[in-house]
Image 1: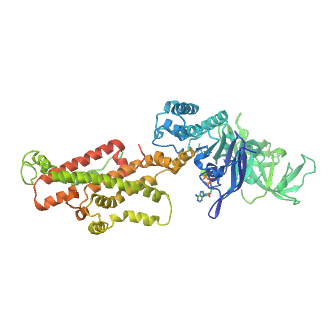
Image 2 (image 1 turned 45 degrees about the vertical axis):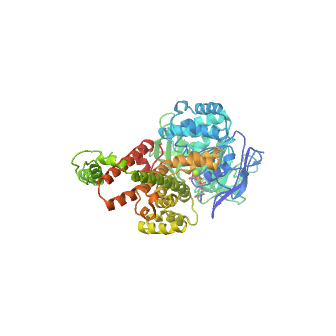
Image 3 (image 1 turned 120 degrees about the vertical axis):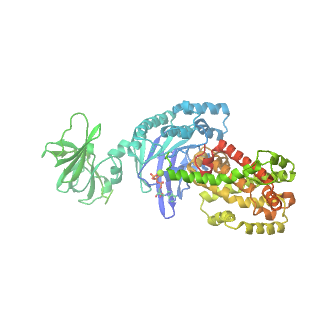
Length: 362
Length: 266
Ligand SMILES: Nc1ncnc2c1ncn2[C@@H]1O[C@H](COP(=O)(O)OP(=O)(O)OP(=O)(O)O)[C@@H](O)[C@H]1O
Ligand SMILES: [Mg+2]
C-alpha cells in the first residue's frame, strides 16, 4: 500500500467538475508535482488533501487511514500557499512557533525547533522581523519553515515560487529540493511551470481539464508523452499532423513509415492507442533539440532559416519547410551553424520521432 | 508625494479654518473673566473652569456620558464583529436584509427614533434607566462600527486563516489569534468612533433620559435653554481636550489614518 492514496477523487462545483476521477499513489518521501494549465484543478486537488474542500466522490488515505474522516486541523499536513499567508501581526519566529504552540509543545523545545527551522531556511538573523518588512523570497522561506517545523506527514506546496523573479526562483528550486531530500518529507507541489516540475520532482502528474493524463518520472514524461497534450505541455515540440502509411513489422524495434504532407519518414511503431486502422491519422512530435542540420537536399526535408534567436546557452532557429515552421535548438558551443535566409536540410533519427493519438487541437 | 497646487492649498486652508473656527471661539469664550459670552475674551481667566467644580450635576452627567459611551460602544462592538464576519465573508439568505437592518438607524430621522425608543422603553419597563439608554445608544452607533469592521473583514486574506487551521488551530483559536488581531484596527477605530458618537448624542437621548441618567449633552442643552453663561464654553473645552487626548492615544497605538481609512495592521 502506498503512503498517500487518492482514489477516484472527484470535486464538482455545481455543473462543472473541477477534478474528476483522480487516482494517484505517492510513496513515503517522494516529491510529486501536479502540473497543468490554469484552471485544470490542481489547487482543488491540493485543498482536498489538506481538508479545505470536501470531495464529491472518491477517497484519500494516508498509510491506509481514511483522511477524509479527519478535520483539516488534525491532518498534520504542512501547507505553503502561493500568497505565503503569513500572520502579519506576528514576527517571523512567532509565525514559525504557532504550529508548535497548537501542539502544546513546551517552550524550551519550541524555541529550539523554531531555531532549527529558521536555520534550515537561512533566516536565523531575521527571527524578530515582521513579514511586511521582508522580501518575497524571505517570506517564502518563512512560510516553508512554518510548514516544516511541525514535522508534517505531507508537505503541500501551491505554486510557492510563482511570485518570485526568475533568478530567485531557480535558487529557491534548488534549495527546496535540497531541504525536501534532507528532511525526507513526502511533498506534493502544484505548479503550471513545467521546468519547475521537472527540475524538482521524482514524478510529475500532468493534469488536463480536471483529469490526470499521465504520471511518470520527468525524463519519461518528456521523452515518452502519452498524448498530444502532454507532449506539447512539457517543453517545446514540433507538432505535425500526419498519417501512418506503412505499418511496422512484427519484431520489436521495427519501424513504420509516416507521411506528413508529401514528406515520408520512418518512425517507431505506433503505440497501441492508435488503433488498428490501416492508415491511421497521428500526431507526429519531434523535439527541437532532436532535429539536426544537414546540407540542403541531404536531409529528410529542406527549409530556409526564417529566424535565429540567441538565448544565451542555446540558439533557437525557426525553419520554414513544406511541413510548416519547424523549431530547432542548438547548444551554443561555437559560432552559429546556419545564417538567417540560408537553405538547410533537416534530419532526425527515426527513434526520436513520437507518434501520438490524433486530436483535433492540443 | 505630489505637490498641491494653489487652489488645493486654498481649499484645504478654508476647510481647516471652517472646521477649527467654532472650536477656537468656544475655547476663547471659556477663558473670559466676565459673566457673559464674549469673543474675543477681554482677559484670560480660569474662572469658568473653576465654576465646573461648583456644579456637581455637570460632573455627574459627564460620568454618566462616559460610562454610557464605554458600555454602548463595547456592546455594539460585541455585536458588530460577528455580524461583520458573517456579512463580509458568507453568502446566506437574508444577508442583505441583515445588513440593511443594522444600518437602518442612519436612515431613520433621529426625532422619530427618539420617540420610538421612548415608547419602546416604557413598554419593556426600562424607561429612564441606564440599561435602557445603553441599548438605545448601541442601536444608534452600530452602523458606524459595522462599517469600519466590515471594511477590514472584506480586505482579509482567508488563506491566512487556512494556514493557521492547517497548523492545528481550532476555529476559536483561529478567531482569537489570527482573525481578530488582523481586523483589530477596524475594531478599535469603530469603537472610538462609536464612543464619540454616543458621547455627544443629544437628539435621541433627550427623549429617553430622566434626571438620574442625564447625559452631559442633555445637561448642557438644558442649561443653555435657561441661561447663557460661559460655563457651557468651559465644559465644552474640557470635552474637546478629552476627545483630542483620546485621538492622540489611539494615534500612538494604531495610527489614526490607518483606522479611519483602513489598511494593513502595524
Ligand atoms: N469555489 C469554487 N466554486 C466554483 N468553481 C470553482 C471553485 N474553486 C475552483 N473552481 C473551478 O474549478 C476549476 C479548477 O480550479 P483550480 O483552482 O483547482 O485550478 P488550478 O489548476 O489551481 O488553476 P490555477 O493554475 O489558475 O491556480 C476552475 O475551473 C475553477 O473555476
Ligand atoms: Mg491554483
